Image 1 (cartoon, helix red, strand yellow):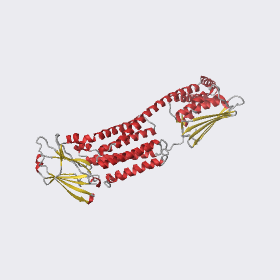
Image 2 (cartoon, one colour):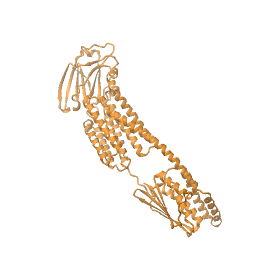
Image 3 (spheres, rainbow, N blue to C red):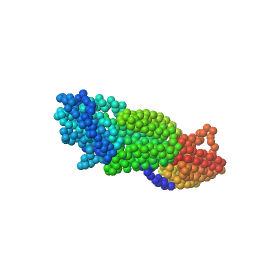
Image 4 (cartoon, rainbow, N blue to C red):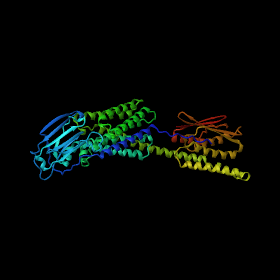
Length: 581
């Protein structure tokens, strides 16, 4: 018997991409852990129902070359405001990438600039609400606020100053404008997580699992990115003092979203020929890992590279799309995604508020319903069809078993063993062992619907032929030319064919029968040939004598997409089986 050829295990490009994405997760987590340990603002104030929008008494500006921005100092005169004797209000202002310094009565009360004694990642303090409790004694003292923008993109932003408590600020001012986007973001995150869990749990095929898994991952990362950019989130979590952590969480979500988008684009093509798309995905994951490493090492500021990162990812998406002839699913994924992102960017640049840019979230929600839940519906329907096919397959296998284990074969075998026991007991023991192996293989096949190795099928065939050789003595000979064995096939594929060779091969002028079993590797699979020199046989009008071959052909089609071709002739029969790779 030929030994099964070892199958070399290699890392596919999909595995490498998955590992790279996992590394991005780890680096993102490391970045967020570092940021979580950095200092922030922690304030608390009781709720009141009245508030004031403060107007500064004077504003002075100073150009700061190292920040390419303008430092503004706001002076407030709070002596004209009514003093609340019941509760203490707080001074609130929402800032983006801006360092704030509060001076009351000539003393610095708050400074959100970098503390050189504390480890920080990145130059920005993030997006946060600056909140200062205003006690009664502060109303008569000089109050000034100095704002220094870190990036040129926020140098001209005009903040709004509130004298209010946290609860009315959240419920009366912030939430009404941001609640729709908050609700959409939470829906996208939870639905994306649900799709990822479903993709892993329900046991989909690898192509289907990748499509659903990366759609869910893309949606989850996009929802986190949008959610972390809302001022309501930083206001609710202001007690923890981790505004910078929240901003970096959103940036990691943004980067992962684009990587997952490209990975999903690659998964939409079911074949393995999209090498350009896989290369683009690997490159995007490598660049993302490099940027995160440089950010963790404080050698790079992600904020400065986000525009170029987004542009580069757009180019990689286009290369992956145009690297082969794109199909409709790929076009319908890529084009609306970047159009909705560009539309949101235009709205944001015009209004300066992320809450007014919901187009991208609406597009993700549409995809979750159409692609996500629609895909689940398709998978459930496909599983139902496969279940029906499995039932049909089991019925065909049962028919095969009935046709194979014939009472006359069992009776003849036992009768021959009985005679041989008197003449050659050792040979009788060998026949009983082969017969037992034959029966065991038949019964085992009833309990499995999976493909088995070719070597295992050959054990069954040889056991059967050894029994037949004992019955026919020197009239039956078998030649094995199985040079290629590293493939799988349905159980009980070869034995019914060999049995037909023996059943229909003897007769007429045929006094001895020679059977040859060959295997060879083809470009897209494996080929098996069973040839004999018998008298040959023609198809029966009622098909009764060929019920075994009919069942084999049906099982090949259902279980692995294989084919069976029978060529009968006057000098023998040739059966060719093809097993796709």
